[in-house]
Length: 128
Image (tube, rainbow, N blue to C red; front, side, top):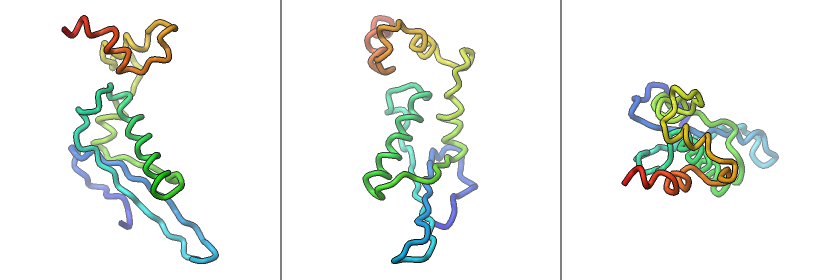
């Protein structure tokens, strides 16, 4: 792949990792690699959209560490991905779900709980 596609439909939730090999004594060519990642079913990620992006980014970084033994120089996102995940990361209370507002204002003794564990512990009574 020579470059990141620009005209991607909004329903495509894509992330692209790019890295440059740089000049090397064995291979003096400066080669650029681009790897694409797609989110197939984001509703199966049982976290708020605010946290889904972080999980996906950790998965991309983990894949890069395992497969290419280094970090990407740059990770970019399609417009659909940004709308679905990154643009939903606002900590503006007007844009947050009620669950996320309650999670962000949780007791300090529960600060170590991730969102899903906290949600199961406190909201199962409300959900049932």
